[in-house]
Length: 232
Image (cartoon, rainbow, N blue to C red):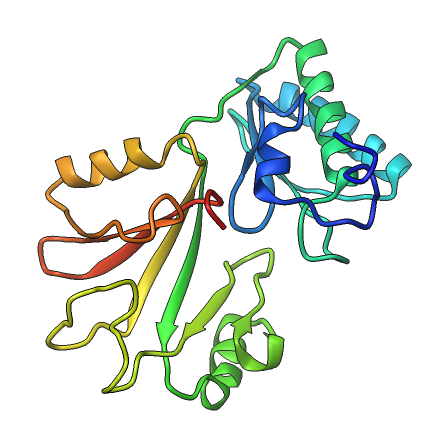
């Protein structure tokens, strides 16, 4: 990365993250860069987590780590700037090095992050309710309910008025759908995920905003979005 990109307080663009060397194991999803390491057993995963924890303490920069029997999943983000910085890139490279030294392979296939979204003309009227329901708190003046270690973030989308375009040139629905899922995938897996959805009986509603997102629908007409960091 350039000297400017090495500024630990500067938020990196999706293109800068994608082009940064040493991040082959990582993909930029909604909340940060994520990697999955196929450890194969709990003991190997725990040993990897121990090394990650020591490095995180040394750097004073702490990732989210999920340990299961077959894998360790790591997500990195600089919360103080609301994005990815050189601190995340540096720690990601160290973590990949630990995995390589342990003979553990990274698996980027199928990395996914879910964000539910609710259409609401007045999010501030319902945000507190959903924060209480999910055991979380409201952020960004009522536009978001924050993710916790138990639930994903929830965001509110203001539906178009009667004289406005129906976002991204989408045809209207009857009845209008209030909830939808934003399914974040790696930029290099989006078209594969889209094809899998179509092969499973889904339909493409709109690709007007691709590669940022594709709008798809199930057989009953319920819509979701396949989202990437590309083009944002």
